[in-house]
Image (tube, rainbow, N blue to C red; front, side, top):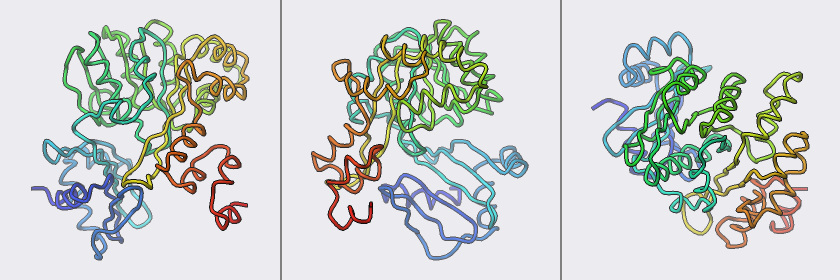
Amino acid sequence: MPYIDQFFEVLVTAGASDLHLGEGQPPKIRRHGDVIPIRDVALSHEEMSYMLSEISGPDRWARFENSGDLDFAYEMNEDSRFRCNYLKQTRGYGAVFRLIPTKIATLDQLGIPAVVKEFGHLRSGLVLVTGPTGSGKSTTLAALMDYININFHRHIITVEEPIEFVHSNKQCIITQREVPEHSPSFPVGLKAALREDADIVLVGEMRDLETIQLALTAAETGLLVFGTLHTNNARKTVDRMIDVFPADQQSQVRTMLAASLRGVVAQLLLKRCDVGGRLAVNEILVVNNAVSAIIREGATQKLQDVIVGGKSEGMQFMDDAIWGVMQKKMVSPHEAYMKAIDKSRFKSSLPPEEAALAG
C-alpha cells in the first residue's frame, strides 16, 4: 500500500472532499468547506518527496521537478479516485488532492434544474458550465454526459487535465483523453476531435484564446461542444469569451458567439445550515433571439433582465436561486449574502450586528 493512502483513508472516512499537503505544516482535509488538520506533526521534505514521487511514478515526478506543477489522477481502490495537483511553494513541495466520486450522480440527485437536460438534446452549438474552483462544475458536466450516454447514440470525446470521472460506454461511445498523457494540449486534442467523427466534445478547461477559438469553430461546424470557465455568472461568462480576444477581433467573435452559444450553466456551492454538506445553486441562460442580439451588440448588461424575465424558458438568475434556498432555510442569510451578486438585496435578511458590519 502506498504511504499516502493512510491520509486518503482518513479523508474518505471523514467524508471530506480535499487533502492539503505542504512541507512545514500538518496535513489537512477540507470537510463541508472548512480546512482542518488531521495530525499535529508537520510534513518534512523527505516525507513529502517519498509519498508524492511514489504515486506519480518517475516520469511524472521528473516533469514536476522540471516545471513546478503537475496534474494527474490517482486511483487508491475501485471506490476512491483522486485528482492530484502538485506544486512548489515557498517552504518546498505542496499538493492538493480532490476526491472524485466513482459513481456518477444524476442531474436530479444533484438538484440541477431540469432545463439543463435539454442541453443534452442539442445536435450542435456551445454550452458552458461555469463557476469558481471547487464549485462542482466537473460533477455537473459528468452528470450531463451520463444523461446523454443513457439516452442517445453519440460519439463523445473528452479532453481533460486530468480525467476525473471515468465513463463506461452505455448507449454512446466515449473516448476520454488526458492532457498531456494522451494529447499535448487542449488545442491539439480539440483539433484532433474534429477529425475523429465526434458528435460531442467536452473541453475540460477553456483557459486560452486558441482553445476558445477552436471551440467556437467546432460549434459552428456542427459539433456540440461543452466547456468550462472560471466565471461566476452568465454575463461574466459572455464577457470573458470575448475579452480574451484582441480588440480588433472582438466584433467578429461576438457574431460567432451569438450564432453558436446555446446556454450557460453557472454554479456556486453554498454551505447548508439545515443538514451537513453543501448545496449547488445555478444561474441558467438559455440562448434565444434576444440573447443572440445582446451578444452581437456587446450589450451584456442587458442579460440580467432577459434571464429574470425568461423563467418560462427555464432561465434562472443566480441571486433568485440563492434567495430561494435562503427562504427555504437551507442556507443561512450570512452564506446567502456572501455568495450573492447584488448584496444590498440580502442585507436586510442579516442579523442586525452582521448588517452593521456589512456597512
